[in-house]
Each structure stands twice: as structure tokens, then as C-alpha cells.
Length: 341
Figure 1 (cartoon, rainbow, N blue to C red):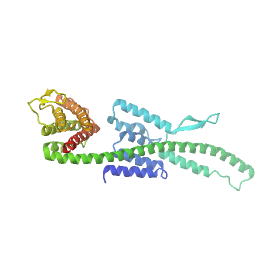
Figure 2: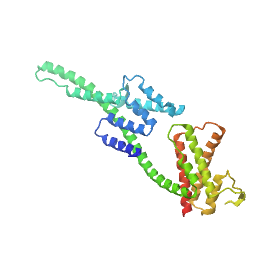
Figure 3: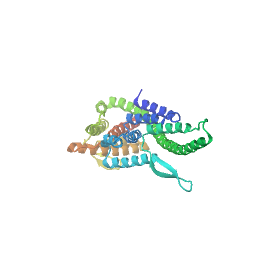
Figure 4: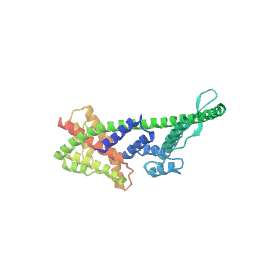
């Protein structure tokens, strides 16, 4: 089973548990999903839901382990956002003189598991508030008054516990729904990309096997930022090799779409791809789209390449590296599809 399918299975299972299982079980599934997806932002608040009252610096410990995943500014924003949400989730309610429900200053700092246990204890305690039948009327009345007062306290706590769990459950449900949507959409896009990749691999093997070899050499399997930057440099080389195969550099001036003559030298690989499109295909929306994509991607990989040549560390993350590889594949796929028409 593919990783994405495994995660989707956990998500769907957790969604089904929302109406029947304890919230702590559902949150544990949510945490598994976040960890499998390297979703550090959602791992943060999910870990906090399991922080117990005697857990010491639990709320500080986990964020510190993922601090390097965020910029200083982003880390501070998330800390404030998640702390505010945690407080608002656990805030008790009270009734003012106008019998209106208002927020109180009381915060339940327990973990979800502790709140579930407290709720179960309070519910059982309420059911056990009975007056024994063998008491005289005076003692029975005294017990009933005591039970009434105890019941009021317990029912207030029960209401708070249920409201807190309800708010956290809604947050968990939203997380599961959002994750399901992302995975389902990702599966659709993955299928589209897989078909494009297959086409590109086959055609490149025919017309430019060296380009395909460069593509297949790209590996992103670690958290090494130098490896991410190198993948962008490889994308640049792929584009250049592709340009060399479909429109080799020339010392003879060529008339371009704007009527001007230009030399398409070795380093003008993006311009050579544009000229290949101009000379071989009629003006169309798809052609314009390819040119826009080429311009954007070309500037991006050239910038990284210039930095790497100067020996300056390029701050490239995994997402950016993956997007560059995917965009390069899609651009070549678009050009090859038009070429096949």
C-alpha cells in the first residue's frame, strides 16, 4: 500500500470514529496522520492536546524539537496562535445576572484524556447522588439538599467538559476533512503527473537520452538543503540539454516573432526553447502558457545556479525543490505533446 493510501485510510477511519469513539483515540489518529505527512504545524497543537497537568514543560518541549522547521517570525506567530486556541478551547462558561452565557476566567488545563476521565467520573458521581430509602425524613431531606448542591457543581463541570471536548472535536474534524481533501486532490494531480512523466520519459529516451539520465539522477531523500539546491541546478541542466536537443545553439542570426534577428548562443537555452515553439507551432493559449512557465522557471533556477556558482549557500526547502522538478517535467510534457500533434 502506498504511503498516501495508508494515510487516507487512517483519515477515513478516524472520521468514522468521530461519533462513536473517545476524542483521545481520534486525536491519536490525527497525530499519526500529521507525523506521516511531516505536517509539523498540526503536530504542534495535537501534541499539546495530550499535555497533562503534571507534564512539566510539555508545551515548550515539543515546539523546541521542531523550531528549526520554521523561521523565527513564523515560529512566534504559531506559538501565539496555538496558545490562544488552546486557551479558548478550554475556557469555562458562566451565566451572568441576565442569564446570558459568558466566558469565564476559568481555564481547564488538563489533557484531553484527563478531561475525558474527569467527565466520566463526574457523570458517574451524578448518577450516584441518591437518597437511601432507609433514612428518616429529616435526614433524607438533608441528604437531598447536599445532593442538590453537589449535582449543581457536577453538572456545571460536566457541561464545561462536554463543551471543551466538543470544540476540540470540531477542530479535529476540520483537520481530517482538510487532510482528506488535500490527499484526494493530490491523488488526482499525482495521476496526471504520472501520465506526463511517462510520456516525457519515453520521448526523452528517444530524442535526448542524456536529458532523461539527468532527470532520473535527481534524488531528494534527506533534509540536506544543499541537496535541494543541487536539484534545482539539475533542473537547469535538464532544460539546457533539452534545448540543445530540439534547438541547438547557432552562430547564424535567426528572425524572431517580433521581426528582429537574434543569435541563439549556448547560454540562451530558454530563448532557444521559445524559438523552437515559435517556429514549429501556431500561436495558441497552450503555447503562451508554456512560454510563461518557462520564463518563471528559468528565472528561478538561474537564480539558484548563480548563487551556487558564487559559493553562496542557497536557502532551498524540500517543497521548492519538488515543485521545481514537477514544473520542469510538466513544461517538457507540454512541449512534447504539442510536438506530437
